[in-house]
Length: 312
Image (cartoon, rainbow, N blue to C red):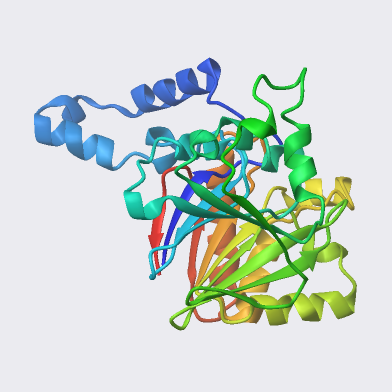
């Protein structure tokens, strides 16, 4: 499996602001010494040793994650604004069938659909999956006047809708897909993908602490032994308790879940739009510290960012 992040923000698109860019430049300039400018090698070494949050950005697009299977199928999880970026990835002739899975239909998870070029190309075929029977009507509604200039009827006719049931596995080629209902206003569904002994879980928009004890046990069974878990980690602990039942989790709860379920890779996801790169990096450090302080076997923790590729 190959996983690629096209959008990692939650709630709404959040471009890097001029003030944030200026703050990065200022922080870099303040670190420079005369020795750092002495030679080309010194300058390169200086740049290489800067904190990652100064030289990169997690990106501002909302949720969209691509998974390319070992049998050359393209799976896409959610159609946030990151889906528009996927339009430009380049598609081989053998890559013109796309399997699109929706966790739910809040605005930040569907807003990229009308901007995804391939949906208007009759040479593409779409298989669209969700546990909601009215998926087509929901997608069509945001493309009605006065909200969008192109109606749903202009999309490729090769669009097929599939209704899923929570915890009921389905086979797509050599891949097994299972969805699981999670605690979130209006409900949200996580997806587990199993292929060739590898297990990937996409779990956006879930408030782990709000579920009943019975549901928490079911969550753990669903996540157990995953090779990679992409998990909603939108809030700090303080914010979580200020916003009960908003349907989101924290990096620390993600670490606890990963430790309990023997997760190999945890990717913090659905980043809060008011957090800049420095804040998200600090939460990543907290998550790593929390995991290390447990005394349990180490596992990989990363903050998901646009453009990131992961091979399983």
